[in-house]
Length: 321
Image 1: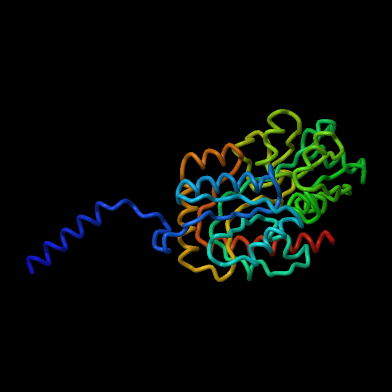
Image 2: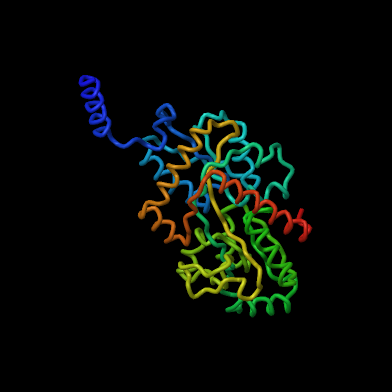
């Protein structure tokens, strides 16, 4: 008995001296090689920025490279399908965006997003911003609505592609305000050169990728699209202050192919939540107008389901094709 007690105490002391385990230490030391995080909108886009920030933080925390792959096209569906078809081993992940919820209604897909992608963790929510070219005389949302009604179908509404979040957010604004705006789709980040040149006059863009143009005075913010104002632009009103009930936002998370082992998903969820709780990363997102979204895999799954239903109603009401 004495020997057993001594052995137990030695083992306990040795265990206490071990370094803290990573969130994924129990999952066969995952990751043992680089992990690919695929995003579907191209270098310099808002999803690319989010992917690189969370990828760098996960690399530092887990001790393996998280390689960001840009597979732009089809409003993110090319990237999504690549992950759907990937091996469910945790080494190919998807940066989930609001576009995934929109695409379920907007496009005929070769997969079922809710069925085929396992949610891991949410990352951050960013408002869209209703922004106009400086040549537009309106300084408020109400003034813009009056200006647009006086110039039907003469104002170009830019988007980052048909069925993109900026597109459906703009269509929701058109329906709620009773406006006739001419939709001009661009390919991803090409929307900003068009806005800066005045080819298009209004854009519902992610504040994350728009804020530097606004701060430089190259574009004018009329409103943010979240239910409340953004700390990043506290003097800019929420669109719902003029159009009650209007709400749209850009949100991001990480997903994996279905059948990915539950222990990998849980471990990655813990790792992501630790990353976004870090004050440095929190501050980086806050500087880009983002609010971190901590939660479980089930929380992200619920967000995806709710957003899918919401945008389904908007797309059908606007008769978008």
